[in-house]
Amino acid sequence: MESSHPAFCRSCRRKKLEAAETAAALKNKTAVALKKNTKGHSDEALPVDPPAVKPVIYSMYEAELNPHVSSPAAVWTDGEDLFWTNQKEGKTAGTVVKGKIHPKSGLTKNGPAAFPAVAITNVSEGAFACAKAGKIMFFSQNGSVPGSGLVTGLLMDTDIVIDFVKNLRTPRGLVWDLDQTMYVADSSSGNVYSFPVGRMMANVPITKTVNMKGAYGLVLLSSGDACFSKNKVDSGGQGASEQAIATSAAKTSQASKWKATSSAFIQLLSQSKALTEQGPAAVVVVLACIATLFAMPA
Image (cartoon, rainbow, N blue to C red; front, side):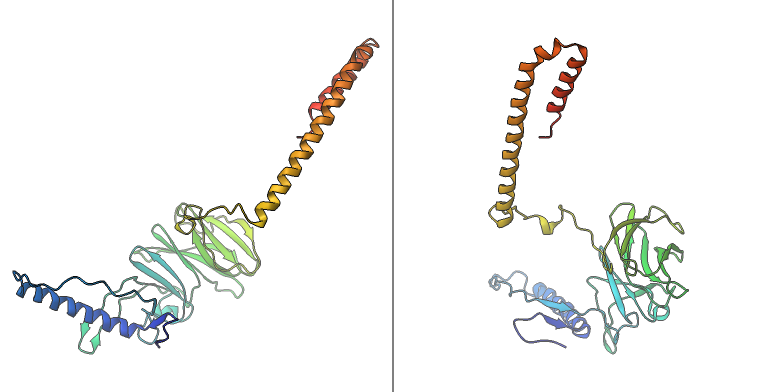
């Protein structure tokens, strides 16, 4: 389905993409051949501005055209590779499937070939989220017992599959911190847990990180991310005004405290001579009072 309304993003289906990819390849081949035939001629076409880029949603992999797409639930990218999970028919379509971000299509007797995709594991009927940490692809899935869940790790390019986490009821979203830790959201408990991913290991220890009702999808953001590169502090808003008032009040309160402290200290010193004449016990009282005055909070 393709929308022609200029105010909306167009949806470009996979079959059209495959045809466009093939047409572009043929056009490029023709252009190369034409350039060779006209080599040496000086009357070349003048350069023109490229057409404006229009927003398009590309539907690259579709269930009706690709056997490895049944009910996709989550996607993960790693370089040129695109991974997704299937919630249904995982044992036939693939529990986790690998495709390409920029897939290429070729010509067949029946027209453009389907974009390439391969199931990297068919271990279960379905999975939810996926996240790749180094050479291990993690995915969350239901356990064999109703009301149980698993976070499973697949060592890439092998058939080695290990259940890292077994003690969560409904593990869903996954996110990797780009180091040695994976985070998983358990939607039924409303908790996000972390666990180590440095090596293939069953029943890893998990640590509760944060609680959020209905926790599901996860993403890690950093102040160093590109989306925050142009962040600026707004010093003219209501929040800034309230902060300035609060700061001023705090400074006034602090000045009042120190003024009262100084006055009391002067009075104490003026009486110290008379008090010390009364004996050592009075000296201790004077010193204790002085210590209390200097210990007053700023």
